[in-house]
Amino acid sequence: MQNPKRQAGMTMWGMLFVVGTLAFFLFLFFKLLPPYMDDFKIKSALDSLGRQPDAGVMTLPETKEAIRKRLEIDSADDLFDLNKILTVESRGKMKTIRINYESVVPMAFNVSALLSFDHAIEVRGPE
Image (cartoon, rainbow, N blue to C red):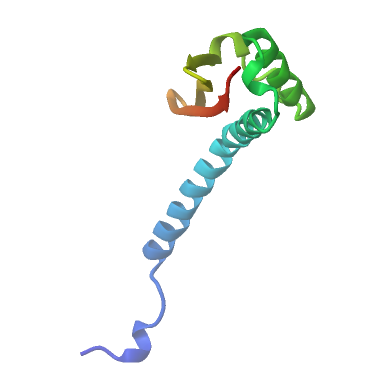
């Protein structure tokens, strides 16, 4: 048996592994944080539109303009083309407003992360 006093602490290789793992996850966190913050702005703009009383009677251009104004307030209006990512579907008396888009984040060299976001709200349409 070895002396217990000599078996204290972590080896250099163990410490390098822990530091390397921590650095890798911090790298991922800081690379992926901006797209998730932008997604939070888009989701909050969509939710705020859903709380508007006349959201169900808005036409598609009016809906796009209302969301664009909300994104402009958050300085996120130039992130995406609303004509491509916004859809409005009517089902009976309900309307579904959906924002569906993808964001590609370059990580390192030729490696990228593809983030897919899909948000939808239902509002009561015209009676």
